Image (cartoon, helix red, strand yellow):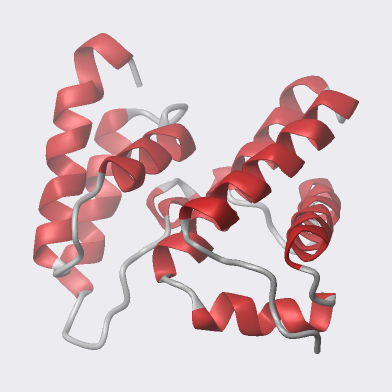
Length: 165
């Protein structure tokens, strides 16, 4: 997407999605969705949102940004990107566990106990790390950024040290 041309249209689209799904619109949500989808053509995202809303009912959960991408942009099971996704997922869990003092098994409870926006934020971070690795390979700077992002999200959502599992 072109920031100058598409930013306001994208914002309006996500606001419409939030309002239809009864999800509060926040600057953080808008920014995280923009980061996750900025490499996708606006018309493509808009088509995916329209199709999602056409199928949604009262039981439908708010979508993840990755659901608004073409299938070829989402890692497949036997895709080489899946290895990177597993790697970065374990880095995120380990960084969050280091900050909170819980075990990786205990982190599942953290995910359940905290706002959906927190888990969405972690998914978006995972998507961003995978995309960065595809573009420029794995770097130590990405590891430092992952640690900072995890710590920042945990602080922003008020996740403190937990009882050890």
